[in-house]
Amino acid sequence: MNNFKLYEHISEKSILVITPDNELKTVCCPFLVLDKKNRLYQVTSIALGNDGNTYYMINTSYCIYSGFTIINDYSVL
Image (cartoon, rainbow, N blue to C red; front, side, top):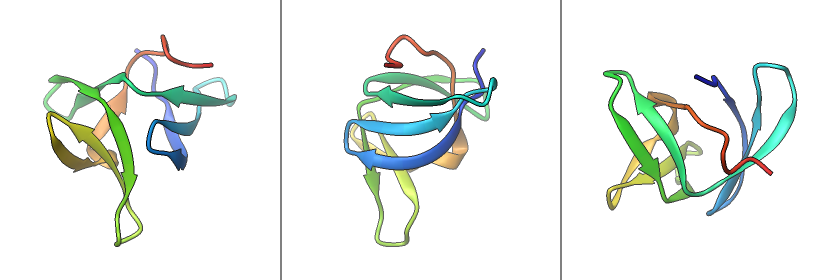
């Protein structure tokens, strides 16, 4: 399991992350995440909220990114 850390929201379809190897990468939607209960979800887009937080679109709802861990890198450029 890859533990990417969010670096910066850059568009509705991609984010910059720092990998466990300290590399800066772009992750593009769709990508998979796990929540705190180890349930798997697919992120279809990303938004920056009025509160300054980053949100993932999951199943037609926006969820704050900090509740999730990116688990794959098949979409890393």
